Image (cartoon, rainbow, N blue to C red; front, top):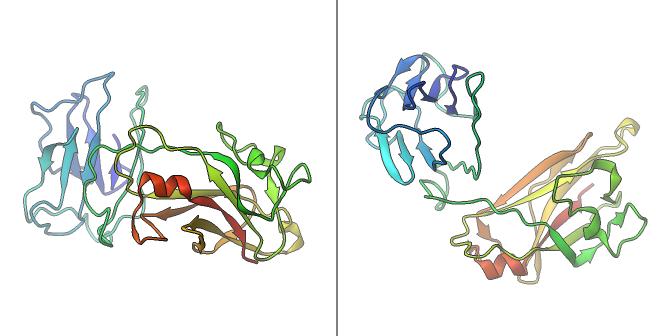
Length: 267
């Protein structure tokens, strides 16, 4: 699925020059190109799309909601597959015509696996929290050769500062955990937590292979996420938890604020 005004994929949601959103299969219109539902300039909209790629979709498989209201639903038996392309999606691209200025915020992507987060979520927002204190375990060393103020090296609100400040360890099983900011007011339903680790292997030239893993501490226990390779330069590693690992139920505000998040050296 792609949301754009050009043709970089076989299935597109396109904003026409007249402000109408339409579905396309390559360059074939699958929905009307005119109508009463028009996107106005200088206005924020909450847009949600559901897409199933098939030569013959079922009713409700492909639809568009704007601010919670359904604008488009493709008819059953519509062909959303172009030629011999695979019946799955592995990329999402936002694009605009030359001279257009568009802003995007609070983006979520779901699939139909699992028991939660597999359909429209309605209006949601993405809140970013930063490390605010030391966690239960602090075994990394800060770039100031200290390990008592590690959160000060990883709390940059304007983005990573690369080698200006960091924490490091080359010892397997070392863990660094952090307490985080409080949640914003009126947060509402928490659909998931994304633990983001910004990591780099600083001895790539020496042939040393490094792996790491995200760590979540909840309910007094540490839960390790999937192992990832650590290369160079710095890269962002994401670990999404749709449920609190301690309770196996949806996160709530108290659970997020009591939890600690960090990273582990696996090897």
